[in-house]
Amino acid sequence: MLIAPMLTATGVTVSELRERGRRVVRRAGKQILLIASGERLFAVANRCPHEGYPLSEGTLGDGCVLTCNWHNWKFDLESGAALVGRDPVRTYRIELQENEIFVDLAEPPADVRKARALEGLDKALADVDMPRMAREVARLQRAGIEPQTALVHAFTSRGGHLEAGMTHAHAAAADWLALAARAPDEDKRLAALLEPLAHIAWDTEGAGEFPYSQAVLAWDAGAFLAAMEAEDEAKAIGHMRGAIADGVPYAALRPVIAEAALAHYADFGHSAIYTLKAGQLIERLGPEAKEPVLLALVRQQIMATREERLPEFRFFDKAVAAWDGKGAEPARAQDFIGLTIDGALKRMLASSGRPPTELFEALLGAAAWNLLHFDLGFDRATSNAIADNVSWLDFTHALTFANAAHVLCEERPGLWPRALLQMALFVGRNRGYVDADQDVSCWRVDDPHAFIVREMAGLYDHGVVEPIIACHRLKMLFALEAELAAAPGAPWAATMCAAMNRWLNSPQKRHHGLRIATQARDFIAREA
Image (tube, rainbow, N blue to C red; front, side, top):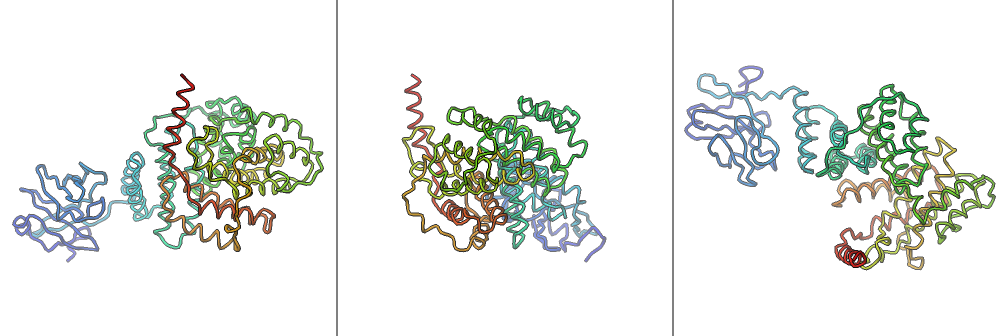
């Protein structure tokens, strides 16, 4: 019986509740637990917010504290706050009418529910508590709020904890969102949305505060590039804040950021990859994501290692200087397979006058061949040198970098020489970690489209503990899809698909306890 718009009859009298102590009633699809404690009456959701067990089976203690006996979570019945545990329990206002108990089942306003969910999300991110992240995002959805709001909030609230700026949590988020958009049902959609949330929590767990400069400088592309080159974060952030304040679209910023990213062999290619993915992420999340994403991107590029300064890559700068666009030798993938770093750079110079797409396809084919022939002995070794701690990710980055470079250089063709020479670095640096004699015929893919669809479908429930590995599976599949769409029937397609098949479906050793111990003892012995 509905007595007032906000009140619902429980059918339970005060005298009955005081006699029995507690009652569970079902109204409007809800289970409501009524409790009498002394002179006080309470109404709370009967399902424990942790895992849904019935609070009606709980223990009532002093101070109106209810304990869920399954996992010992404790709740203040007055406020619903979790005294032990995390999520609060939902409470309901009680009103008495002629000895009968009525409860107010009205939902709080959407803005209140949003604020509560985001507050809970902050706690879940700090605790790296993925189940609670899921519950808070589901609460946002229930309140009619787009779940992407949770991602914008996470990148904003956790951004200041990223000492080195953008991570794969941002870079893969655009692809997780794309996967969510393809999800066949709401459960899978939520699963995909949770991945970048859990990843940013993983990346910032236990981290301190690293605030960004608040200065705002007029946007000036030249001054921005100079600040990036000088590794002056305050100035670079200031110019980026100026661009954001002026509403400069990312489409106009990306070629400039790409120039900074490709000025060096930056952080194993991450800077170029992140430059591409930042734009995709902003496009999917909307303008509110622009500031946290771009500030993280600028910091990452400032902090990025410039690997061309390492001894094995020092010919890179000379190759850039020697690129004259006159080399006429045609280029194929097999021309680069097995070459050293310097050999791959010199071979590129011999073809510097060929069309960039020809050189790109040749290098992409060589990188795919390397991935297909990775010698797993290096992944499993326990007594190798630290410099030879090579894993699948050393090979996969060559392909995600290639995909990013392809897009960035189409926008700014003058960047092709640096991008292609960096692709050659990937090919040359991995040459020593392949086994050319192994039989890889079993990894052949007959239907690339069906292969991608099948492997993407598996990402909703991938079972991989480390976010960094799961996100590389995702990013590689989207990169493969994009490159196949851009060049149907390309000469590298069969090799790349087979390489992806092998990588995605081969065991990966991610814990190297014995290797770490062996290398530590060797290091200390040499140190002594």
